[in-house]
Amino acid sequence: MYSAQIHTFGHKHSLIFLVMAVNIPTELREFHREFEKLSCMHDAAEVLDAFLEWIAWGFCSDNSLLWESGKRFNENERKQFLTLFQEYVKVMNERIKGDGDWYDLFGTYYETYIAGKSRRDSRGQFFTPPHICNLNVMITASGQEKGQKISDPCSGSGRFLLALHAHAPGNYMYAEDIDHTCCMMSVCNFLMHGAVGEVVWHNSLEPGSWFAGWRVNHNLNKPLHKHFGCPHVETLQKEESFVFQHWKTQKTVDEHNMSAHTLFSSEEDMFSVKASQLTLF
Image (cartoon, rainbow, N blue to C red):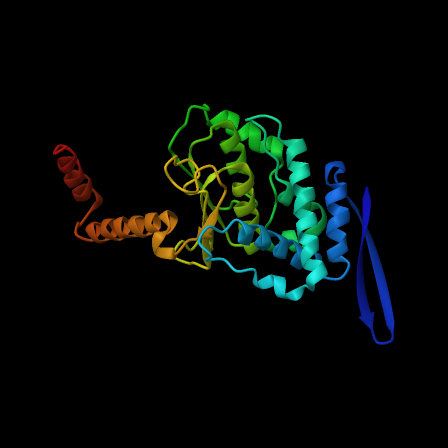
């Protein structure tokens, strides 16, 4: 299925229409038809953001999330988000048949229809193909990992973490990205795949930065908790984030090591003291 994206450019009294054909994956055709009922009246990127936020709002367990973007849509348009979600669930049911399956609908649709090449290039967004994610996981993970903390500092839609979760469930995932849409895709992917972890919206090259954070499925696998077995998400504060606390601890260690380095007149002196310290353990 090919969908036409129309871009207009105005110059004085003339308009130039540029029609771009977009090849929609077969499994997303019905989803795309429902999506276009909204994107024909609103910017497609805004519709996707609103849909992602609508999902997170619906699965929020502590009323900490609001659907602010929903104010842009009228009553009938807001009802369309439910129809869109129904199509999303249908696709996921078709694509995920076994424990080792996963499918990144949001990332696939985003890179196919939402984000043009110029937007991806300007933001340095290059989505890794799913089969490469699976290959990477097969090479690096045995499948027996349990209870480990796994981080992807440039997570995009969370594909690598989804692949690892499908291959070795039971680990705590940390997704970080500078792009808000990518973070929301990770949140929703975590929700729908039963992955447990944090999603942090910040610049991972400046770990102290912080825009927002979400804790996803934190109590999903705790039998005595009221949210056991129920996908859920809640707002994550900076001070509660393991990602931020880990960076803060590492920064303290690095500053201590830097200060210690200045106490020695030469590298030889520093290495000799380090050697004597190691003998204490």
